Amino acid sequence: MIKDKISLATGVLLVSPPMQWDPNFRRSVVLLCEHSGAGSFGLILNRSLTVSMDQLFDDLTTFPEEVGWGGPVQPETLHFVHREADIIPDSIEIRDGVHWGGDFDVVREHLAAGIVDPDDIRFFLGYAGWSAGQLQTEVDRGGWIMAHSSEDLVFDVAEDDIWRQVLRDMGGAYAILANAPDHPSLN
Image (tube, rainbow, N blue to C red; front, side):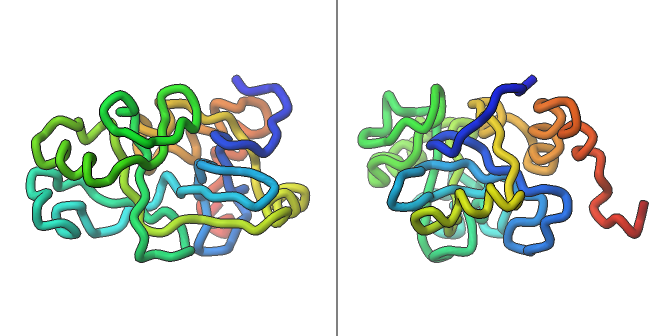
């Protein structure tokens, strides 16, 4: 259970509250990959696209995994998180067991050769971004619930379950929010 106060930082999860109606972030869980005085960069963990890596890259026919929608900013850019820092150079540690980016040419070679397990890497088109101070303002206004991330939440929890799982793990009133209906009128 997560009971301690959480501050905005790299590696924190941003969980949209149940009444978040912005279609870009409704019931989303965002992994903050970078947070500094200059701004914030995150990837939405629970939005799939109907496109796969083998559709994006002809040389990756052995890697048919779906690509996630990382967010509304620059949807033509490709980003990835992984737990393969020992074989993907230049990656940035977000938290224990979770790394962001790295040498994409090496990633392509490893994927084509079957060296990287599909369960150990996730790809995203686009990202969620905030200018300096913008994210803190949104948090202060109740636009986001902050939670601790874990390797398991990033890689092993099913996309359809992550929003509720994070809230349940937080316990208390957050666990109650996890049971909020998708549409209150259907309650």
